[in-house]
Length: 163
Image: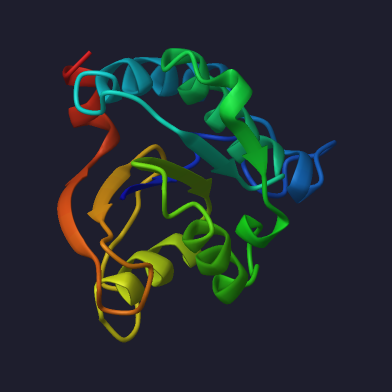
């Protein structure tokens, strides 16, 4: 399986009046840049069998934009374990249940995504930084610590240039 790990796009700043953290949406710029990045992803990824997203609005909006670009809206599911501070163990178990699929994408938040990706690569701590809108492809023959191999890690600007 190829696991695609994506950090949500540019969102309304934390602490902005009128928004609680869970309900901070993408900004107009964030939506526009994410749509361009998603278009770039379609030039690298042939299809997505499943998209798992954090339920927080900024991640869910990001996942919807990407799912739309791949015509995979009906393959989008929400996982509370992808929320900030969620369970890495449960997230890995959910991914492992999908082992028959060829391509799974998760959309979430830092620093959790960095720790999850690093764990799969066999690293202690976080060695991968996800800027807003960045994506990393990890080949996973088995969903377990140290079994993943990074195929590529692209920043959002590069993804937009690929569109």
